[in-house]
Length: 260
Image (cartoon, rainbow, N blue to C red):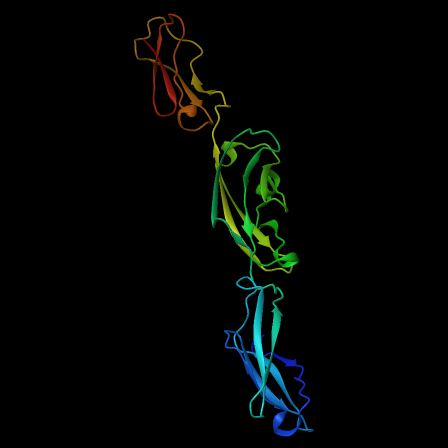
């Protein structure tokens, strides 16, 4: 903490009066200054005062050279090296390797299929740098479909994935360290359509009988054909097998059946 004070044991000098220790000199450094204090008995001691905050991730140890100077003539000095060990504080939150992760997943993928693994790092050490993962603000539907390993950050499939029920999922993942500092990343999962739906034929209207002299072009029935798959998997081609005296008028929807 800035301004923190650390008392240094006074240097010993067998001489007295002016020939005893009169001052201290701290080698110039980036973090500490040295203040000289005097007790009621007139003895001098020093304090290391933190002048600039330390960062263990930049430097784990400092060596400071302190010199004690007496007032005699010739002047004599004594030196000591002060070892400062910098302890870790939980001052770094986890950082994800990416802010947005993307993955593609085929519908109908088996249970426990790996989807993607997120990864975060923490510059702190020990428990301050231990990371766990969890979902945040997850919909009930996504909770049923995906699970997240809190230790490895791997997301896997936990239920049947159906493109027709959802073509994209966005999951928010939180990384937390041992004392609760956290960060967040987004995972976007695009579901790839598989041709797993057969076309469905729905008869909208159909004449049960047709006069033998009905002219060509007479409408016989209207048929609706649907396929729940997407893109090419959902494109349907209709045809009449054999030599039946009918032809199809292909409309966007439905299909019209006429006499040829």
